[in-house]
Image (cartoon, rainbow, N blue to C red; front, side, top):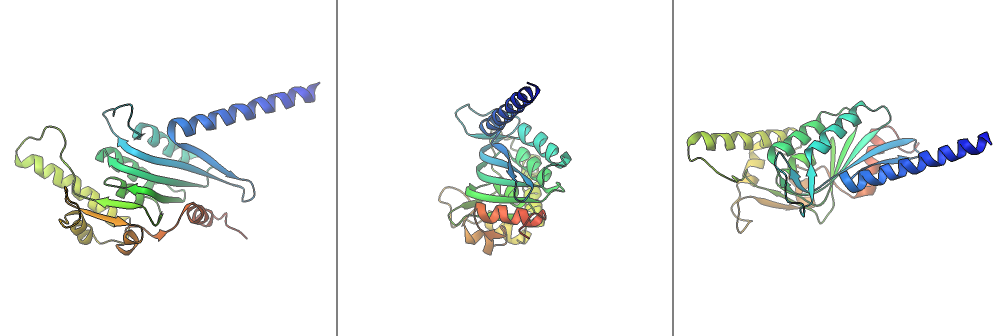
Length: 237
């Protein structure tokens, strides 16, 4: 009788855990990948759609909310169970301050981190992609690099433009210090007038991002997970 009670409790706990994991995937695009063979746990974080900052975006927009991501990153750093972090990125960009906050948080983690660009990593998605210790991009994915855009009310005084210049400088410094591209070359790509019909900037597809020194390697989920296992000491013996 006692054994049956223990078994029922274990089954209930397992079901609750599965429901919690399913909820995390639906709500936050996050889950933990458990590999019994390697005895490893990799946290999976999806950064998709538009990065939402202090203002709520319309409900029909696909968003990544920084107030969800930051506490989870802190929990990953504090957890003795998590061996590494895999970041899947397919974003059109979004709030600069929120994107930089997430990027700085990822860059400050002591756990091994790997990013994988799928589809696109545009605008503030560029710092997010390079914030990991190692980065991958699939052959068909794109990265769009452009100057900081001015949205909403802009006061036409020199201080306003100085402020946007400082934001842009923060992005340039972060990307160049977390990748192989030189700051001046990144600035040149950002201010290119030959590629985008209605904007200033550059589009990099797959291998072009590696050639420019922004992303480390072309690869997919297999390569990204393999690199994480290697970095965390969980690779094949």
